[in-house]
Image (cartoon, rainbow, N blue to C red; front, side, top):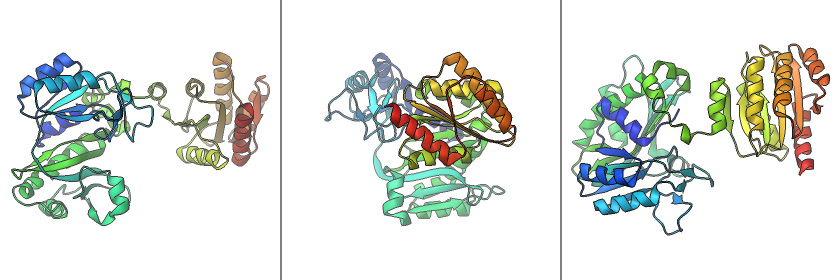
Length: 399
C-alpha cells in the first residue's frame, strides 16, 4: 500500500526525523490559511499523487510552458494562485503514464535553503535477507538513471537485524554521502530513526529523495515516499486509515476484497492464472507472440468458486480486454473449481470476447467436462504455447 508524501512525513516526524512544517490542503481557501499559518517567506506547493517525478511533470490541461507539479511561491497570493491552477487538474509524470493522475490535494510546506541534494532509501535486500540502506550523493535525480550511468555512486549497506543501525553503520552512510558536521553527526540519529520506522511499521520501501543538507549544515527530509507490506497491514490499522482509494485502480480495489493478486496493465489480453511464476510466464509468452497482457491476476493456490467468479468479473470489467486466457495448473487449486467459477461468471456477466482455457493437473478431466457441457464458446488449449498462440490469433482476428 502506498501513501502520500505528507502522510509519510507525518510518520517520520513522529519518529523524530527532521521534516519541514507543512499542511495538506484540498481547496484554494485552505491553501491561503496554510500559507499564513506557515508564515513564509518561501513556500513549496506540492501535488499529492502516488507517483514520482512530480516536479518535472506537466498538467494535461495546461500548455507546455506551464510549471510542473511542485512549485515555489514567494507570497501568499502566489500560493493561492498555484493551488487554483493545480487542484482538479491531471498531472502527467514518467510514472503515471500518459493518462496521468488527477490532483485532489496539495501539500503546502516551508521552503528550504538547499546546499546539497542526496539520495537515501531503505528496502528489503532479498539477496542477503536484510533491510538495507541505499545511498548516493546524486540526490534529486532518477536513481535508476544514476544506477545506469554511474553505478559507482550508489552504495548499499545491509543492516544486521540483531544490532540495528550501529554507529559504524551510520559512519559508513555518512562517508558514502560525504557528510561533514553537523550533518555527519545527525546522520547517526537519522539512520536509526528511519530504520526503526521501516521495521516497526512493516514498510517495503522508504525513499527520501532528496535528503538535503541545508546551507546551515543541517539535514532535512525534503521528500518521502513510503510503501507498506500489504501482508502486514492487519497489524497497523493506523496505516490502513491513510489509504487513498482515489489513487488506486478500481479493479485493483475490487480484487483486494477477495484477496486476489491483481495488477492492471496496458494490454488487451486478460489473464487468469494460479501462481505468480506461472502468471509471469503467461504474460511473457503473450508478449512473445506479439500481444500485450491486460493484467497480472493470480487467483492463488486455494481459490474458491466465488473467488474465481470475482476474478473473471474483474477481468471482463476492463474495456480494454479483447480476449481472455485462463491458464491453470492444478496442484492445490483444482481444475474443476476453476471451471465452475468461469462458467458461473460467464452466465452472470456474459462473454463478449474470445476465451481460451488451458487446464492441467488435479481434476483436469472434470474441469474440461464442466466447460464442454456448459455451452460456452470456449477454445481449449493443450499447453501454454498453444494457449498463447490461440488467444493472440483470436484477438487479432477479432479486430
